[in-house]
Image 1 (cartoon, rainbow, N blue to C red):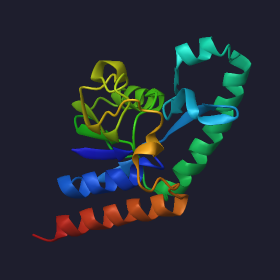
Image 2 (cartoon, rainbow, N blue to C red; image 1 turned 60 degrees about the horizontal axis):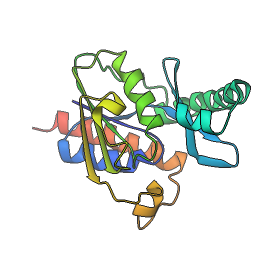
Image 3 (tube, rainbow, N blue to C red; image 1 turned 90 degrees about the horizontal axis):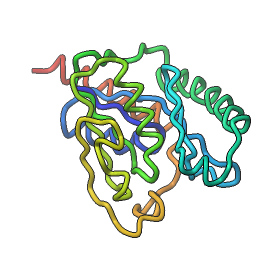
Length: 196
């Protein structure tokens, strides 16, 4: 079993999940393709492995050009690579083949980011993909919609509005906090392996 967090907001949630399950924790890098002037609304997402998912209803409704999508995807790929360097600190990507992978984020609004993550992880041949989130829009919270084998959620409030609305504190998780949590999780796992 392996817990993979979607940075940055999913990392504190995944840290707790990994600790509860006594499972290794790592990050899986996915970047939302946010709309200009409304970054939280995803018109799609990209993930490692060259995966790009578009939220077709949003793209078509707002008549977003492929040129704009390509420009935003290029910018987000640069950020994805920067984060890969910071969060991994030279560690290789975790082996996924044959494992149960639990993908964790802080919530699902449109599902674009998680769909990209599931599709990218699926290419690595895990035995099962479980999506786990504390909160989700009800229409997104569907394993078939996300391409997962299973989905676990805490709440599906209606009306949903946005992920941050359902947290008492939804302050941005920093790169430093992500790196610290991942390092701490690796140290805890190594300690648990060494100790009987």
